[in-house]
Image (cartoon, rainbow, N blue to C red; front, side, top):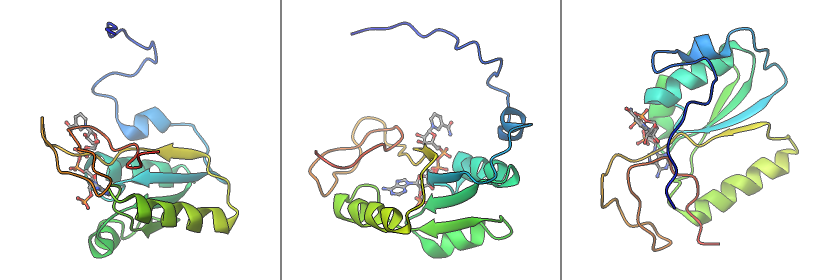
Length: 138
Ligand SMILES: NC(=O)c1ccc[n+]([C@@H]2O[C@H](COP(=O)([O-])OP(=O)(O)OC[C@H]3O[C@@H](n4cnc5c(N)ncnc54)[C@H](OP(=O)(O)O)[C@@H]3O)[C@@H](O)[C@H]2O)c1
């Protein structure tokens, strides 16, 4: 199926910044999970959401790197599943559910830059260059 791209009419453009998009939005009391929130685009999004008052959980495979990158960002915690491992993802989800916190916003930012043939996952699927939204086969 083919579908042509068309503008959303959001008023934002390729040069819009995270802070510009979120200006005037109050996210106090909102819980956000962001994958790859410690690096690249994800880090900028994490910072902007934190400035708007959100409570953030970043999904980061390397806790030391995440801790360094997120130093000074308030109301953020790092969890560490590898998104390509369904068992670790299930553990992460169970930990989240056990807290009883509602999840208001899930940002599937983490991604791979392997055009064509990405790595094989433990679930036997193969990744390409795009955000990782699910590693499970179910
Ligand atoms: N930059 C661009 O021009 C561009 C253009 C189009 C789309 N995108 C998409 O935008 C997103 C962010 O891009 P970026 O440039 O900010 O990328 P980046 O700097 O390479 O950051 C990617 C993030 O994804 C995480 N990640 C990758 N595989 C993971 C896994 N298996 N489990 C957990 N985390 C994983 C990385 O964690 P580690 O630090 O542990 O590796 C890192 O934090 C990606 O989905 C990318 O495909 C980017």
